[in-house]
Image (cartoon, rainbow, N blue to C red; front, side, top):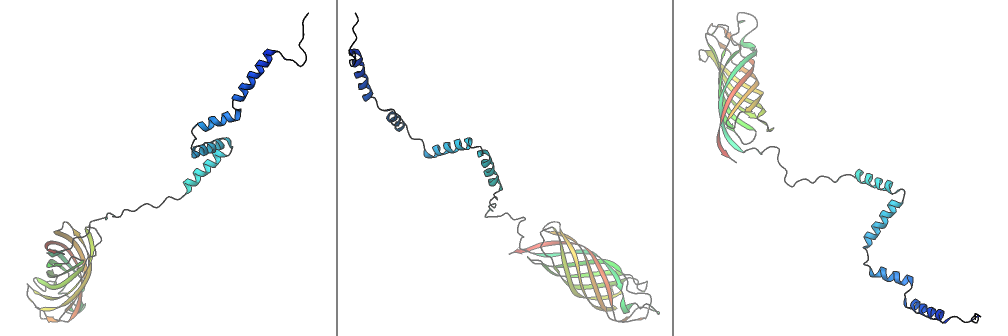
Length: 276
């Protein structure tokens, strides 16, 4: 016959197991406390890293994150670039000019083209044959070239003129004071402006039968072959006042203004005088 324990009684083994479990439960920390201890024991991640991770997670999670990144890149590309930084010392396009004084002298082949002989050669009557026509010759000049754009000098020129066989050898001689203004444009070939005044004599075979005065103005181009040599061409307008005289054929020539255009092909050299 099997006996049953009373309804409120528990076996001894069951009681012992219940007591052991209750002791273990009180000794073990709660679940939340254990997780907090573990999280506090671990080193804290940097706030920026956590924020970046959260932002990246949010960007990846958000459906419009890629679009916002693209708009940010476009805005950065559209932003104007900062102005370039200029160097404190800028290189010059060409070296500064040398402030040197020169003595400049040379020779020139010249041509005198008669525009109007004036009263020297009337257009009708027995004096119709013109005693003063066009011609060619040589000029010798020298002067001072300043460190700036100015040249001041003098020139002697003689020209064999067409005298319609009234002179065996008609020589037209000029003695001039002249100046040039040569702006510095930074090239070997440079234009210049010239002007001057002077006196003239004319006669047969270097003789002097008449004389007068002249003024002139013109333009030219000077090519600096080297610091010591210069080539150039020029064109000048030259009105000449010539006094009346009696020529070798005993014709009276009246006082008048003859007009010429002169062309020169010149070669000049320089000698350094000093520096400033």
